[in-house]
Image 1 (spheres, helix red, strand yellow):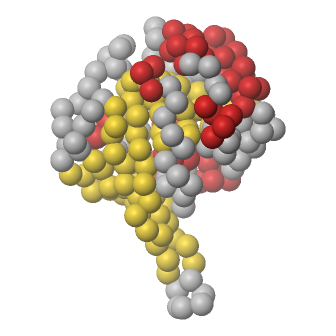
Image 2 (image 1 turned 90 degrees about the vertical axis):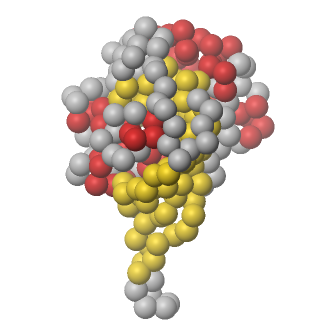
Length: 218
């Protein structure tokens, strides 16, 4: 499945694009690229938002774009929430994806991401902290984000942090905030089926007044 097939969109209020440190981006092949050009390579990007806001689906779309280019990717799963079937349905080539399960231990996830980034050779490394408690997230030393930024700044790798709230902050080149507008249902009352989500993505860094509405097929 083409990763673009998972996204339809309407855009409004777009501002001038920004530049990645290497000047290259991982384009998703979807209309989201009109807002962000793609995810900047050699940099940290954060996808934030509540549950069912499309943040994980967007991460899958980025991985799908990278594996379609025959790049090897890694998914560091802090709380064992990764769904291979959903990822494959979004276009991810699972043969080109390393799945690291951390059993709910945030410190293991951080160490795994550190090892992967310093090993190099990955198109995209996703660090999924969505279901790590806010208390544990706030206890993560800021030095990790500086270390991660230095590890990839001269490489073509993309580090995607998927979480509820921004954590890398000043170390991130891009922050996208996801919000759910509504669920899309079909069928008769009492027999409805969930067909997708209507969500909105807003670029919070670099600062922008623009936003992009996205409909994600689930």
